[in-house]
Length: 310
Picture: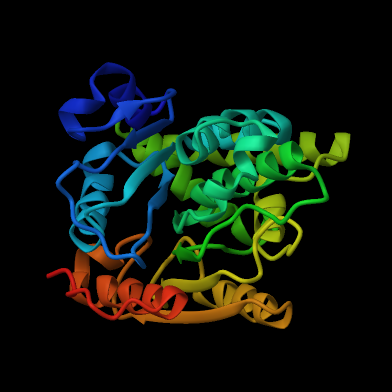
């Protein structure tokens, strides 16, 4: 079990005040009744954290969004890497049902397609490939419930922070094993090199089993899902946040994904950060980070009255 999950199971309110736990991975926070909102602000912000992210690291994203959009509900999803890797798609989708309940009040077809649901203004923030896996599972869960006769999961904007990367196993075993080992190293007693070696063995085993049974990997599904108009709304604005110094998700893979999205009709924009590592852009360049999100949201819904988060 990852440290992030352990913290959620103990006392998440100590790390993230005001949040209510919906499941081991999912928390929700409603705005205070005194919060002032603009008619073009998001009504809900959904944050899919990166693999094994700790609550204290996600807190700065929550704080920034609360400063920009104080009247928005915030749904927060933690992403244990091991769970994302070993769960099959149907299980991952069921795990994301509380997200739909938090946003729309229920997972019934009536709730998800109601007039009030259509009035929601939703901003989705996805971080790293593991966050992307859970977002794709949410898209799939929504489609499974409403059926083919309805539009896909409604959202006005999708922010992709340090994601998505390539899904080719042999070219990515190095960065993937590093990402998995970093998350596990904080609670394993032996040297990091041993943890990373075990991560390589585990990933190779999972890949081999997937090949044997013909199962599409979670990474492959998620990368394709966000560029599938039947699952991910082609009308939503999209913003890729990335750096050429990221040694886990490579910039050229993100740009390739963005180009594919553009070719399928998605409205795509990108923001490149200088000298930042994986999901490290906010920490190094907070003003640039929030300005990019604020500006893109304005393009999505026409809001031009907010101040940039300092």
